[in-house]
Image 1 (cartoon, rainbow, N blue to C red):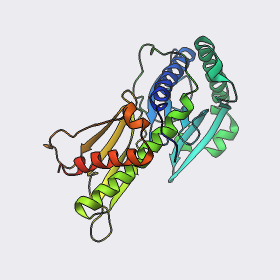
Image 2 (cartoon, rainbow, N blue to C red):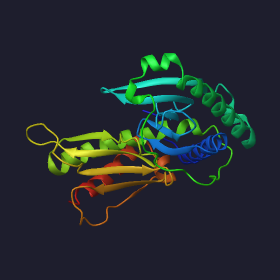
Image 3 (cartoon, helix red, strand yellow):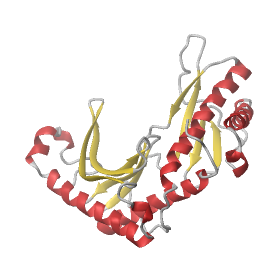
Length: 284
């Protein structure tokens, strides 16, 4: 498990700066383009809903959580239960490219150059004979509806090298949270639980886990999740919980990912998260 330290909060600030800078780079290189935010537990970035003749809603500029230092640009879509991926431009390793040692202005220029190169290759790929052969006909032009255009520049600072620790440390927190939830459920209700990370492509604003109780037949309950835990990127110091099965449920408590919590041992962190999840699961 990744060591969770006080570096977590500066790292999340660096991550927010990076995505604001990436948005700026995309919008500056595509002044007439339409972008959507896109994200789930395992990836985060921007989708190009519309730009020139690119297939609508099929091109992405993103980072996968398993490789937080790798930025890529690709065409991607789901077909027959499998994802089609075609990477465009050079896949860049932010550490190897010395991105974090650059000043703010040079970091933005670097990202703009990456986007410009990838877009040029994407436009060539879009009309290529190879693509016409391997891409199913229904995906040649992409989707029919543009979601929205993100208006205005986002403010951002220089992205520090703390960035590469943000997602691994946050995963460490979620790993401890899952242990705490299982322990609390067994203690309170003598029930096992099913835990799944958020998977909807539009979850750019947060990462989290959905929980369902396992019934005596060994199956998860039917219907929506019983509880959902989230950490929003804008408030990386707050872990929130929501009771999804009861609309008139009293407000659920939140958990402060404080400097005190981050400075504790793994055992102490797990104990505090178990106390918190026990409190949440008792509200039904």
